[in-house]
Amino acid sequence: MGVEFIYPEFEVVRNQDRCIACRVCERQCANEVHHYSPERGLMMSDETKCVDCQRCVSLCPTRALKIVKSDCAFRENANWQADNIKEIYKQASSGGVLLSSMGNPKPLPVYWDRILLNASQVTNPPIDPLREPMETRVSLGKKPDKIQRDKDGNIICDLPPQIELSMPVMFSAMSYGSISYNAHASLARAATELGIMYNTGEGGLHEDFYQYGPNTIVQVASGRFGVHEDYLETGAAIEIKMGQGANRGIGGHLPGAKIVGDVSRTRMIPEGTDAISPAPHHDIYSIEDLRQLVYSLKEATGYSKPVIVKVAAVHNIAAIASGIARSGADIIAIDGFRGGTGAAPTRIRDNVGIPIELTLAAVDQRLRDEGIRNNVSLVVGGSIRSASDVVKAIALGADACYVATSALLALGCHLCRTCHTGKCNWGIATQRPDLVKRLNPDVGSERLINLMTAWRHEIKEIMGGMGINSIEALRGNRSMLRGVGLNEKELEILGISHAGE
Ligand code: SF4
Ligand code: SF4
View (tube, rainbow, N blue to C red):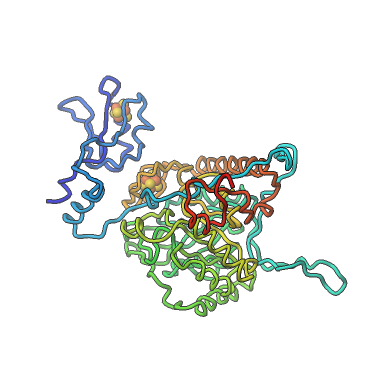
């Protein structure tokens, strides 16, 4: 009793006049939705297994298929909606914690969509990005508060270690294990070609990817998987993961079924064992403890690499960021509550954390108020969906953005939200060799490069429209932003005026 109370969420609609029984859909579906019935001479569907990943729809040679949301209706009301009812049935059947993938899907405000950008008119002319220079490069790391000169009056250019980026976007942490070898290869190659960074996540670095070290951020999480001297030496920067947008306040968990072959070797744990990153780092209970780890990592790498501290956006984030900025970290990465993940408890994903837009504005303001903004760079992530989200984030105070879901979409992800099953039909969130090979890294990296190239053009266009010719001039320039449909408190936290003001 229980799960069987639930009518399938999706219906497979097969146009039998078009279907030529080629069985492509059967071969392509790791969830075993389609099968051929010799008795009936027809293709049949088991809709209970369909996750709406759209793989069969995309590859059906005769366009015979479509997947539609079932219109079978629960007796919903404003309080008890279909999802609430289904989740009760699932838990009554399994007795377990509900798991989901990707980010928070709840209809909470997306502030990016309630913030509008300025454009120059008449007195402050726009800049044509095709004819005039536009600077999209950024460097992340500590900066001096003012120009420093030596005793002869020459400007001192020695900065602490920096991350140099051709544009203010990086691929966020996605571990080898949670995503496939070919997905990692696509990200690493694209980052190198684009002159930006990708991030190992907490799964260590496969030996094949050491060649991409100058464009790699290596992560140190509470599980310390795959962390060793060569790993730290290879990365261009080191990220300490204290928290993650999708898994705020809890650790990470990669099921033993995904710890196979190279994944187990790279993580340095036995095959088949669950990779559990504890919720806390067991050696960090204060900013002083964090400072010790920051300096241990700097010491281990000869003070040659910037150290990033990544945290989830939570209620007292401004105070936390202030502490991190004093811990010796060079960069703070903050992950908002819409950030995706391979597997998270549904209740945590949907109910914990705060939006990145409010977080960013509050943190940038706090660091400015305390006179320590130049101690750190700020990187934000958690559902950055487009070039305009990037521009708004920079204007709110970020130095750069992390993207992950957008990068996975470029690789072919269809947001079916079932990464935790390990049966990704698009070869991304899986370790099954037959599925992994569906993603060709040559194609994957090209699509990522295309996406970022398009965003870079758009960023230049938007900046040009505002009469701004560099990311540096845009950063924290909140006069370029106006809110629509926001209340006084929201505008106050965002530090922007309402449209019309
Ligand atoms: S892929 Fe299309 S044509 Fe081929 S069996 Fe499936 S539905 Fe029929
Ligand atoms: S990565 Fe794969 S399994 Fe995860 S949401 Fe995208 S298509 Fe679905």
